[in-house]
Image (cartoon, rainbow, N blue to C red; front, side):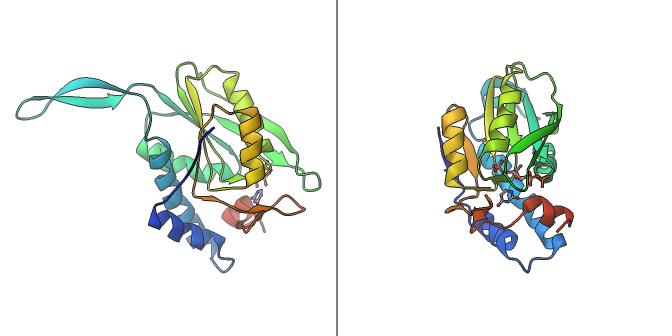
Length: 206
Ligand code: PRP
Ligand code: URA
């Protein structure tokens, strides 16, 4: 399994905004959106393409276009913040939703919603900003794989080693794209140093 950590200076700058506890909700949301756009570009760099020809105003030339349709599947709630950047870059994507919530005591995620489009032959991009224990991402990807996609990609903002290990165990075929790979989880299964509860900071439910 491959883990790709962004080396883009702007990604690191925006992540610093997200980590900073003094960042106001407006700046948090704006930083989250731009950072997700960077991750959307980086995570799609190996998308299947096909060669074709295009007529410019002057002549015909070889060109490259995307070969396989895409689907983006945000894990509710926090993953919603990563959907719009993908829609702006890839307006034709199909969109699915998986609702998962971690129990505050056990940190085990349980599913409360799942609505997926037809994923046959599509590259399915699962987006969730936090990969902590990996329970949420692993469950969501299991649901996605049941719909026979061409392939699956996971895009997160921050990952913990525990989440990466879980993904490696359950879904070694799924590449992971992140802005940072953090140190560890605390005893409440929050990522350290992390940025706190992404969904709460994004939606002002602290
Ligand atoms: C957060 C986050 C991930 C999950 C990661 O969601 O958005 O979905 O935790 O943790 P895990 O890797 O240990 O499963 P949360 O359950 O807090 O729900 P929310 O997005 O609605 O805030
Ligand atoms: N979910 C979050 O939002 N933050 C963490 O640190 C872990 C899970």
